Image 1 (cartoon, rainbow, N blue to C red):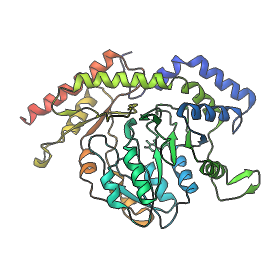
Image 2 (image 1 turned 90 degrees about the horizontal axis):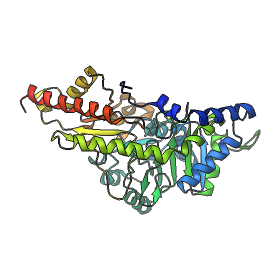
Image 3 (image 1 turned 60 degrees about the horizontal axis):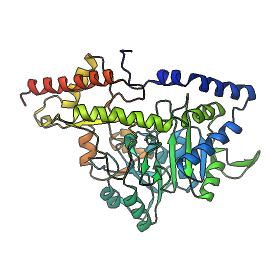
Image 4 (image 1 turned 135 degrees about the vertical axis):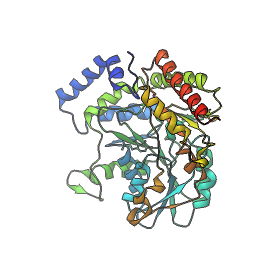
Length: 388
Ligand SMILES: Cc1ncc(COP(=O)(O)O)c(C=O)c1O
């Protein structure tokens, strides 16, 4: 197949179609749509896979963050520190609880939250830190947990992009007080709709999360706390249970694609391939390169934007994750979501320099070469145009 796609959900489905169809039919036959054995089975299998005591299936990754913070009792007057260079959901969940999102800068190599920036933002109102394991690589959890101990803060790992990644011997998501996951279809472990999960080793927090996700009720009509309706459904759980068996294979394939990209792009002086920090695995939810802008001062088109335009003309899909850091969104500047933030030299730079290339388990070597040739040709064309 010559058409290159950013993700290939149909191709992945075809490869395991029989198992998926059978799983879906079992749920239909038993009408086990909400709660039930398929959800319990997936929760248990994911707990075993991650090496964690509790997994609570919820409606999506955004709810997982919100419920986690509700379980920690976070609300008005509290501050939660998170990166600004992330998908908006991380901050949105904080704002929804009327707490204040406080944005830290990133480490320019890993794109993950900067430890120095976190520490500079801590005040007596700070309750929690949400590191986001961006693009599939865990943040510096040793340093984050040390800060949490020093200042008595809670840690929620946003693992929406990093299922299966490891930090030392531990799975991403199992190091902080809570870890949150998204099973949005394009995620490394994606279902066929919305889905998410919360993981924790803390029995009390697990109990609270389960309660909150189910209208605050353990027993029907006995609503103990104000909760929400956020449940992973039986169909999604059955699909995820099938795909979970393939997750390590998917991660291996993604790493092979990343290795091939690295090999073909690394020598280009205008391109920085993804940094892989020691002692952690990167599961490459995204393969994101950086193209420095030594010319932006003079009003020339950004190198990244020029390459993006050329790729578009060549029919090569790509994406900018993320073009606007959350702290610059007007809704986070004013009103109820008004945030506080540190100096953002790295965040403000990389938003103009990052570009993500197609990344999925079905990419072929021919396609990878087509993509990298197009990138390299457009970098050369840019250099010629501006004589650099
Ligand atoms: C870093 C991050 N956090 C949270 C979410 C929210 O997950 P969901 O789309 O399942 O609500 C996403 C997913 O898009 C994400 O990438």
